[in-house]
Image 1 (tube, helix red, strand yellow):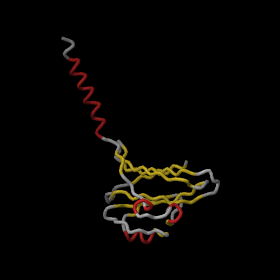
Image 2: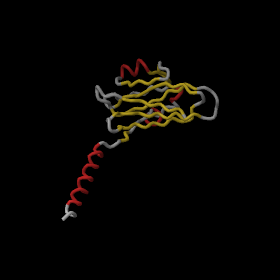
Image 3: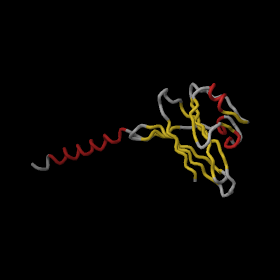
Length: 148
């Protein structure tokens, strides 16, 4: 008789565990001027008036006013927003990696920017950017910059 409750308890444990799986971390795609618009290395050819900071540009007008450089492609801001920032580093930058995720359990949209420095001991001041799917009007973007 005492063994009849065992399957019921096991089922309750499984169902309670499933409740925590409702939020799944999702990786979202990002696009970049180099790959999408055939721009040359934009780390040093784009310009924005920021220092060790990032902003999200949501309109063509803001983009035209705030971003300049040798490559200034037309961006469809009805489909995309542009996260763009400038970061000073102690050494020359080799590569920049981007990771856009919806983080759990808060459902926060987070862009992680990994700036990989080279062995060349020359200070650098690079512009990083990522085109991402259009954010909601009140949707926040959290940006984490790691210098490695």
